[in-house]
Amino acid sequence: MPSSTIRSISITVSDEDGGAAAAPTRRPRAGRRKAAARGLGQRAARLLARWWPVLLLLPAVALLLFEASRLRGSPPAPAAHASSLGRLDPTTHLVRGVRERTRRDSVVKITYKSDDDDYDTYHSDANSTYLLQHAEATRFNLFTGFQTLSEREDSFKVNETVNVHCGFYSDTGGFKISEDDRRYMRTCKVVVSTCAFGGGDDLYQPIGMANSSFGRVCYAAFWDEVTLSTQEAEGKVIGGDGMIGTWRIIVVKSLPFVDQRLNGKIPKMLTHRLFPEARYSIWVDSKYQFRRDPIAVLEALLWRTNSTFAISEHGARSNIYDEGKAIVQKHKATPEEVEVQLTQYRQDGMPSEKRLHGLKALAEASIIVRELTPALNHFMCAWFNEVVRFTSRDQLSFPYVLWRINMPGMSMFPVCSRRDLVNSLGHTRKVKPLTQTNPESSAS
Image (cartoon, rainbow, N blue to C red; front, side, top):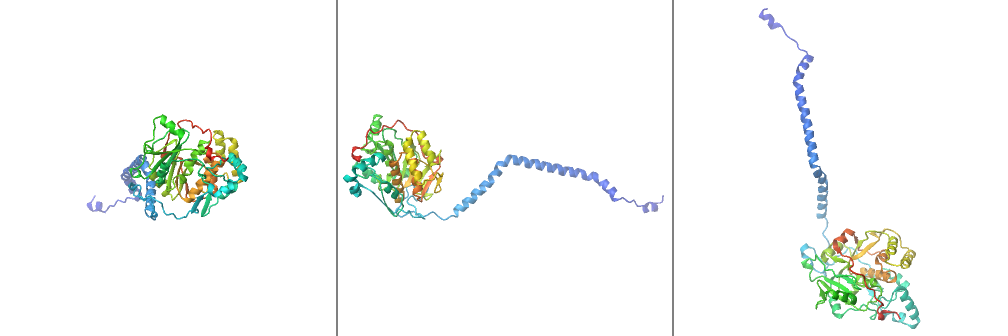
């Protein structure tokens, strides 16, 4: 065939044919892409399985950073009052003292009833029979004064000036303290106190106090003569400075009540009457060893929360009427005593709510942290009078007083915080009751 003819021949290839011809070259590439995708997915799954805890923590960290930025932008804390205690704990760089509050306590001044004021009313011959019967029925005596039901009702009223019964009613009412101890007590600005009457408990030395608090916090332990002799028999003798370790031992004579639990309520509830110059107090039951720095406790439970009073929530119950049943079941008071008290509270309209004024209704009163303001002193006087009038179980009367006196500055801390403040070492031995009350404090 001529060469010109060969050059004129053309070969046509269709699109279908071209696609069929190209397919073998594309399939290997698609397989490689699918394999790569599978490998990437497997790698991501392995990374997720390895780092999933970190992924979960990232939102929490972001939230913490956000809250920290909000705190940094919050307004500064109020400045300390000019008459503050000073920087009692400079290691924390926080001013210690009386914080200026945005609210004002309603009670500005409190005065206490005494036999000098009520002599004509309570010491006349016409009232002698009534006085004796009233004292026998309620345990009121010359230490407590003889609060009538009308006076009880008035004692819950909150005014700028209040006049109430609050112990130490008569010079012959008992609870005698030596003049040396009284001089020491007048020097205290911050006091940690406890008591052991009837020889029931050993004295546990506090731990955890910061060096900056030494010499600025008083530790006062109230003993009676029974406890004194019991401790001396075990070799624990008061030194010439009145101290055993960190504790100043204050020996009380002529206790006013047969019930030692009721005698113990005096240093527990009437700190403001025993330490007239004190600004803050921390009460610790004798079964505990206090293990925190007192100034740090005030900072955490009062100053940071702008509170004047802090007490532990009850860990088991929330209702005053359930607490009454538990007291009877545990033989901590007679059924008759509890019934009289709860009947009065029902008549007064005491609700059975689990919360009162935003707080849990029931407290565990083994640790009490408070500022000694007139309003708080009024509250403690009313609480003490309820304990004298009814049962010695202060946890039963606390919700009632809280309900009647809706005072600002009250706070409660959880049970876990209470356990963090103290080591619970328990009661050492059974308390020895008094055979009779102080003869000078009787009403007859």
